[in-house]
Picture 1 (tube, one colour):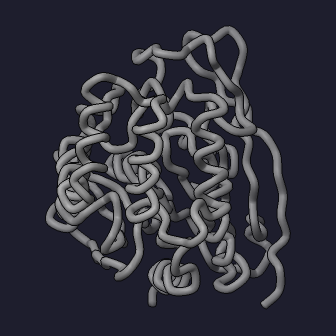
Picture 2 (cartoon, rainbow, N blue to C red):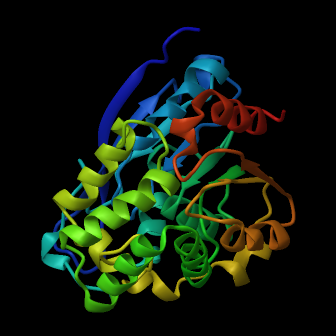
Length: 314
């Protein structure tokens, strides 16, 4: 297995209402050129958060080496190595799913992915929300879609969270609920309680946090503009502008073959994943046993094979 070549760069992204263009930073594993001999459509990888950035998803770069699938990672606007807009903190009219769909469209056009082999999408968590809503628009060139550890609506995500809290020790569940009611998200009591949940349902690798979970958390906290506005201060109950988000009514419009997967111990429990299975016409749903939200870290080889086989028609 040879290492795939790696290239980084930036793409200009013009946002309506902003005087200066933004920059979307990307990292490509493998060759995108049609003359490279590869017949595999490139895979665009959408990170979660919003704001967790690309690094925690880098295990999926194994697809480039093992399956000859070129992989495009990028940091969504407002995060990581892309343009930050701290002055837009709290601006719910600016930070919308539509903004991120436009950015994704801009990236697809930059790499000229609509022609020839087309392209695939893998979205994790919030990235799956973004990817599914984008696929429902039936973009030209999209061949396959992977929705990883994602909810079909935030109302159902909240139900999933309540199910998980009900299974936690009573003192932990009570602390989280009490702190959320009082908006005491910076208290040591809340941090200790939420860490107990994360160890069981975010990433089960010991010692916690695994490097992938650690870098994602770092990205979310070093500039909380996007995450704080859209998600809010708690991973359990969405209190930001995404709290009413749903793609359920649009899922029937997704025409491409779709793989949906979650973990048996996932934050995204079956209750919030099921609508993908019931409403997407060409869909396969797999629950990976003994994994949580970062199954690609916990059972890396198994998840890579599952995704790689799907993308290559296996």
